[in-house]
Image 1 (cartoon, rainbow, N blue to C red):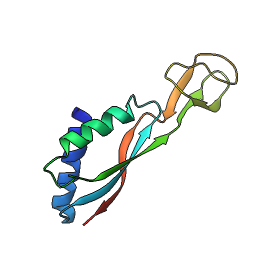
Image 2 (image 1 turned 135 degrees about the vertical axis):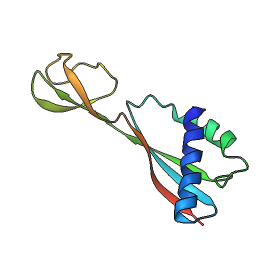
Image 3 (image 1 turned 30 degrees about the vertical axis):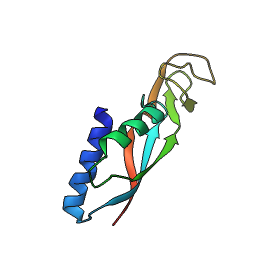
Length: 110
C-alpha cells in the first residue's frame, strides 16, 4: 500500500511542477528482483488513486529482467532471484547489477 501511495504522491508532485490536471496512463518499470507483486500493487493503486488526479488512470507494468555480475567467472548473467547461483559456473558469488528497481517510466496526462 505504501508503494502505491508513494506513486500517487509522485504523480501529484509532478502535476504541480509540470502543470497537468489528470493522469490517463502510467507505465511502471518493475525489476524482477524488486520484490514487487504487480497484482497486489495494481489493486492498491486502484484504491489509493480514487478521488485523485489519477482516478481512473490505467497502470501498465513493464517487467525488467534481473541481472548480475559473477565475481567468480567475471561475466554478466541473468538471474531470477537474489542469491541465485551463476548460471555459467554455478558459484554463488553473483552481485546484483540490475532489475532491483521500480520507477515511473512514462505518463500520459491531460
